[in-house]
Structure formats: C-alpha cells, structure tokens
Length: 521
Image 1 (cartoon, rainbow, N blue to C red):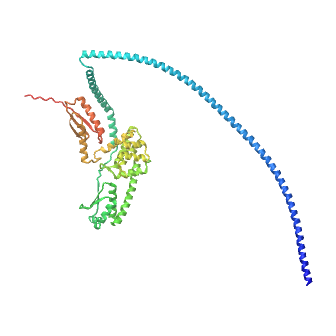
Image 2 (image 1 turned 180 degrees about the horizontal axis):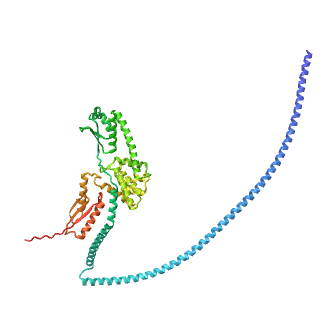
C-alpha cells in the first residue's frame, strides 16, 4: 500500500515537473518568435520608407514636368488670343476708316441734293406762273371761239367725239371685215384641205347602241325553265346581274334591259351558258354569273391591250389600259365610246402629222380624251377634268393631260395638241349617223340659238336652220344700217361661241332689206 502511494506521488511530481519544463521551453520559443518578428517588421518598415521616399521623388518630378507643360500651353493660348485681338482691332480700324469715307461721300451727295432741290423748286415756281398765264390765255381763246361759233366748248366736244366715234367704228368694222375675208382666203382653204384629208383617211362605220339586248332562244319551253318555280331562277338571275329580264309573248326571244352595257353583256353570256348547259337553278346561276363577270374583266383588259397595240401607243399604265377596255361597253349619245376614241386618236394622229406636231402624243391624247366617261365611282366633276386627273395620277405627260382637260374648254389650252383633240372630237361626233340625240334636247338647242339672236336690238325674226348649223337673222332696216349689220353678225357669232355648246360650227347670216312700195292708180 505504501509502495503504491509512493508510486502515485512520484508520478504526480513527475507530471508537474514535466509540465513546468514544457512551459519554460514554450516561453523561451515565444520570446524568440517575438524578437524575430520585431526584426522583420523593422526591416519591412525601413524598406517601405525607402520606397515611399522614391515614389515621392518620382511624383514631384512628374508634377514639375506637368506644370512646365501646362505653362507652355497656357502661353500659346495667350499668344493666340493676343493675335486674334490684334486682327479684330485691325478690322475695326478698317471699318471705321470705310465708314468715315462713306459718311463723307453721303454728305457730299446730300449737299448736291439740297442744291438741286432748291434749283428745282425755283423752276417749278416759274413753270406754275407760266402755266397760269397759258390757262388764262387758253380760256380767253375759248371764249372768243364760243362767241364766234355760237357753240359752247362742251357742245363742240360732244359733236366732235360723236363724229369721230362713228367714223372710227365704221372704219374699224370695215377693216375687221377686210381682215377676216383676207384670212379666210388664205387659211380657210388650207384648213379645209387638212380636215377633209383627215376625214377621208379615217372611215369607220357607226352602230347606234340602245339600252336593251335581245337573247334568242330555240323554243318557248326554255322561257319556263329560265323563270323557274315561282320565279326563283329569274329573280336570282336579276339579283346576280343587276339586269331587268323581260319574258313576254315575243316568240323565241327574251329581252335584257339595263343602262349598263357591261351588265347586259354579262347577263347575255350567262343566259347562253345556262341554256346550253341545261342546269338552271339559283346556285348554278350565281356560279355562272361570277365566272362570266371574271371572263368579261379579262376581255376588257384584252380589248384595251389590242387597242393600244393597234394604235401604236406604248408605255400606257395598266389601269389606263383597263379603262380603255371598259370603253367598249360604254356609249355616248348612242356612239360607242371605244370606237369614238379610236377614231379621234387616228384623226389626231393624221392632223398632227399634217401640222408637223408629235404624232404619238396626239394619238395618245386622242385615245384617252374621254376616259372620264367610264368612272369606277360616281363623281361630280365633268368628264374632261376627271379624265385629266386620272391621266396625271398615272404619269401621263403635261401636254396630254392638258389636252384631255381642255377638249371641252373646262380649262385653258396650254399646248397645240389641245385644239387638235377638240377639233377631232367634234369631227367624230358631228358626222352624220355618228350620234343620236334626244328630240327634246335637239329642239331646245334650236330655241337657244334663236333666243341668242333675239337678245340683240333691231332683230325682227331669227330662224335656226340646217339642223342648227346656220342661223338666219332678219333685222329692221330702220334700226340697223348696213355697217351695223356686219357688226351685229359678228357679235351674235361671238355670243353663240361663248355661251353655247355645239358640234361643228354655226353660220350666222344677217339679212337687211329696204323696200320702197308705191301704188299707181
């Protein structure tokens, strides 16, 4: 037991002694580490101070160099500004010198002006005095003349003016008449030659169109099939085409009535296809009408292309070609519009060639002059202005556009093509059988011609003859002299020309007769 206790105590003492030795050794190591760390820190601090000193010296040197550089630039800027200031001062001195010279010059001019003003004032005063003396002398002379002649100055003036006016008017009318006659002798023959030659070279047949088409059928049995049960087929056909279909007692015929020739043609072709096919019912009718309408549109484009090629016109816009094709199905006063436009185009080409103008432009304007008559939608504009707008829209030349717009005097004519288009349009429309006029409008035109003549004083009777191509005016011999008759004829023709629209020309003949009647008993 004592041994064990001794061992334990020895062990404890050994452990305590080992722990103390370990602490002493650890303490010695830590002190060494601290010394080494202090040495390294002192070394690092010394190196850092050296490096900092070097950096400081470099930065000071850089700052000095930058300062020298900035100082040099500043000196250059100052020198430049001094130079500019010197230049400005020089310009100011030059301006001052120039202004002083101009002021001196202006002063001299002003002095001269004042001297001349004084001189002119003196002369005006002298002239006023002389004018007063002249007026006084003139007045005394007039008084003496009035006493001698027995007439006042106003009466003498009036008599002199009236005499001179009558003489001048008579001589003027005589001169005008001679001039007109002389012009007619030289120009009328050439104009007639050109127009007649043009008309002779273009000869086309005219067919007057109406508002109905007749569809021939093989037998009257087809009429019942076209009408359908309770009229379904005919109602569907009228609704699809917009054409009134008249089925009456006319043998083997159905009448198609519509103002639009395109619709009538679509209805006619659709009926032909339906009757040939035999299947007639509302659904089939709509299908056939739609196909026929597409076919007519294609045909319109084809007609336009053929027309343009036939006339030798190139570079026409596709929309204008389509408009030209639609003319085939339009008419004006019963005259087919496409046929009329082709004829006008040929007439214009020939007339332009005779006059030495551009033939291609003339034919182009002649073909397009009535495109305003086939609008896509209703318009309030006259057809000439509407056609001119279309031509401008689709890139036509200014001469062509002006010719289209001016062929009915809607606008001012600006080129030589314009009167040619107007004349050729009148020639095409005025030929016998070319157009059909309503009787009422024809009679009204004759009445308007006569009313124009009755509007002048001294007219006793007026008669429109030769289908409105001549106006015979009978005047009262007491009120109208022979010289006044020529004047009256000219004034009536001018008024008809400015106020009325007519094809061709109107001849005005004034007839004056003096009769002396006595009876021998």
